[in-house]
Length: 286
Image 1 (spheres, rainbow, N blue to C red):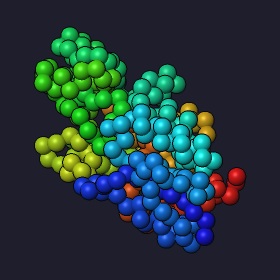
Image 2: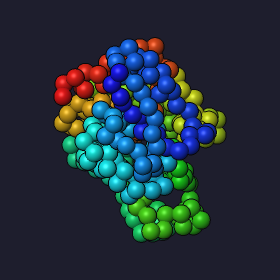
Image 3: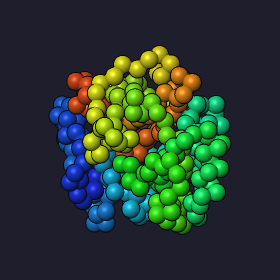
Image 4: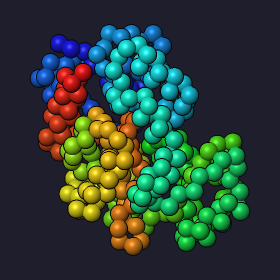
């Protein structure tokens, strides 16, 4: 059996994930899956043919250390999926500015750092033409430190002192329709889901009570995701495209997840098998 590592963290208590569904399909193709924490400085990465970044969902607590860990893995000679250069680009949500420059419709976003004050807050509300603003760090995961505000809140603002942060209009479609996620393995579409927040919330993650259902993407949404993938310049082991419906009725990109997205294998019977075959194909093309 060939050896592959799924990169995780020390403790995933409270998180929902289903990576184990890919273990059997990978085994049928001759791959044995092991799990290692990105924090383990003693891990022998070279014993694996590949390390697949899967559930290191506390990386935002030590972003520098996480990138250093990935660099050690790649420098060991082991194949890293997705590769370090892609992770480094996707790590900070400023990549949304690149997509926008490529002509891709993106949820209006303003980036700032140092201090969130009332002037910045009100200026963005006016520019975006919105009554509600969502504020979060530019390096974040699982909606950590994500806030929805109608008015400037000094206590929330202090959480962003000395940090890069981003502001977006609250997209009403998230609560009345949901957020779509489209999954691609080695550049090929696999499946899609619709994520909806629980009543009274706006966060769609399951850890915050979000509800997940299978979805069939509209042609416009599929075309938008294809446009995003084309802008990346190369097929990746996995890519998750998150989009919402804008006020004009068209779809807009919320995020492009290329580092450690939950892949929701359980929402489509063939998804784990497609992932395994995509991985095997990439490894056999070396």
